[in-house]
Image 1 (tube, rainbow, N blue to C red):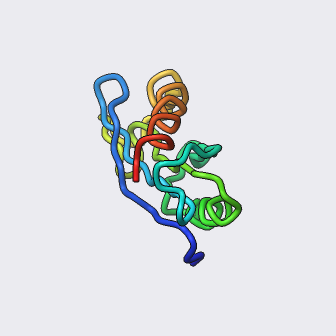
Image 2 (image 1 turned 60 degrees about the horizontal axis):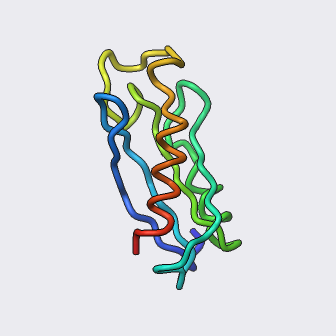
Amino acid sequence: MVRNMTRTDITFRSGSGTIAAWLYRPAGAEGERRPIVVLAHGLGGVKEERLDAFAERFAAAGYACLVFDYRHFGASGGEPRQLLDSARCCPWSRSIRRASSASSTRT
């Protein structure tokens, strides 16, 4: 594990559900605006399936990184579980807005 970063578990609303995510920040970046990378697995995968390795490397390179589970998968909310409906499960626009907000306001 790369040590020059922090990881915070966060959630945010998307439609009527809650999205679970990890926010990675480079060490010493508190209060700074940083470029941010948004990551999610291919449909059917969850963030615990090695997306942390990618996020840690981005954070080590100075980027913030938001890693999230799609709605209906992993730690995110949504019923039925494991629903493969891209119109309902993939909150990209909300994730990008949340990432922008989190990158500039979270410490």
